[in-house]
Length: 376
Image 1 (cartoon, rainbow, N blue to C red):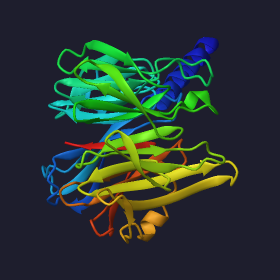
Image 2: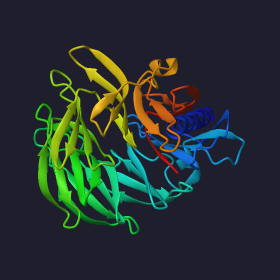
Image 3: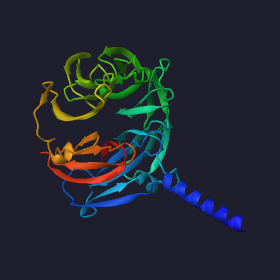
């Protein structure tokens, strides 16, 4: 009997430990800040979660005004979808809303999760190996993919872009691009894909693949620089692509592409960026192995003139105290902005809110490694 009791106790302890380790329940944080006129119902935040930890989660900032103050809900996916696995999966890489649906790329779980945008209730998923980023156009979602396992090797396969019907969630086509494709942008009937070649270190890729959306074939390539990452289009038809260098003796940079040719280069470190109007807002966090540490930077680029802008909006003490800037989200209506702090990569991060002049307003605790956001 005594042995049986001991075994039962061990089983209970084991069950409790597993639940504490793998299940993250939704929590509601009242910021105490009165609801203002943001122009949006809410803001979804996708938390990456450290690779291998299966800790990708979805948070929601309620701006609807249903309460008198702003509320932040952590890990809403588990609460909204009790019949599915509690966690979204391993490494949340991108998030977007198209029509009435919320799309989330879960990189190492090899899937794109699709939910109702208004409720975050699950609709289904699209299985894509080592998927990375999203773009949408004319009823289709385009998903960049490393098209192979997470493995650094000179023999890694070329990447792919998959074409997915946004209603049926069926993959209808795919096309081979460069090595380890990252962000994409659509401009004038063409899909531009930034190829990094990150798995082939030190032989990085340096090409932007240009896909004709009508034929869904690669029609050209634009040589830019090694190890590309971010790629966005401005309202003048220009493309802005960031490069990460080789972390040793090739520095990061930001390039402007006009008429499928590189037209400008700025010596900037870009880890996240967003374009609103004529302004490209960016944060830069990079690790240099020669210097042996991280560098942090914030700034604005005038996309019309292709020059940096002198600004004081990133001078608040709360910004300077951010441990690891990981994401920036601009409200396109009032120019207020949110900064995401990944902290130490293995514990909860923070979302900090600032007005258009850079004055600190409030902060909340997020999931692990908050990286991307999308307004509802």
